[in-house]
Amino acid sequence: MRHTIRNLMLSALFVVLIGSKASAQGMPVYDNTNFISFVKSLLESGKQTANLMKTVKFLKTQKENIDKVNNVIKQLQAVRELARNNQRLFDVVQDDLREILNSPFIKPGEVTRISDSFDAILENSMAGMEYIDQILSSDNLKMTDAERAEVLKEKELESKEMVAEIEAKTRRYREIIQFREMQYKINNRETSY
Image (tube, rainbow, N blue to C red; front, top):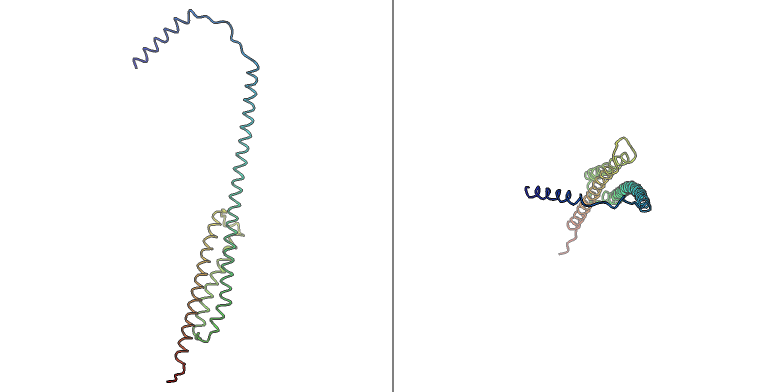
């Protein structure tokens, strides 16, 4: 601290002593062309900055638009997958259930139980589709596109689970039919010994 003060005092004394003997050459001269070109470059920089700000604003709105389109595409993919899963459910019920119920190895008491279990899955599927229709067509729920896409993904997973469940039930009933058919063949075979 003392050292800095001492240096400042010596510098001030040096300037005072030298400044008294030094003299200026006259008035400073300004070059008007350099000053004008400097002002022009400042104006041009201001215009470029304004254009850059407009570009940034434009790019920001375009990014928001791309995000909206992305969310809509995700929603469409989820709806398409849901429709495929539901179509698969209906196909399984139409074809495989008829085959299972027409089998002679299914007992009459089992027919209603099997039909009820498949009906429950189909009703759950239809309720899910009605909910999705309500989400997509109604503005009463006040959901953003991201929230809507998230709900659709959840419903898509639920529909995949329903497809897996109905396939497992179909496989199980076919195995039961095969077992009973084999059991019937074993019990009714002709013995020749």
